[in-house]
Image 1 (cartoon, rainbow, N blue to C red):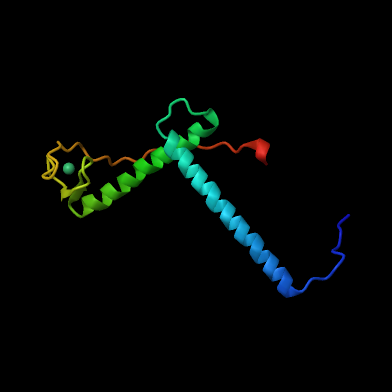
Image 2 (cartoon, rainbow, N blue to C red):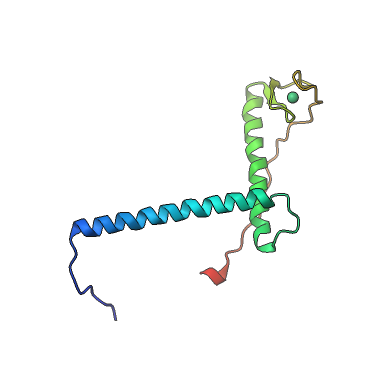
Length: 124
Ligand SMILES: [Zn+2]
């Protein structure tokens, strides 16, 4: 059996309250994002992180790598590459960085496959 509202509320009140709910939802989402980002930064190289978080952290690490691959692909099309040591932009064929002197390794060109995340049935 579905319940009906006992009282009518004005469209203005409804709109104001719905706006407040949206604002709180947005603040909460932003806070959860910040929490997740702080947790990721603190644990991205932690091999002993709880298994519940391991897959997500591994995937974010892979996404960071894949982002670099896409940047490399764009740079290569432009005949350029980025020094991994100092971020200097160089001609693609360069063997050494002319700023920091590091020997340039082969540019990563293959994307990493993300691990499929199993939905957590307890939270659904
Ligand atoms: Zn360099």
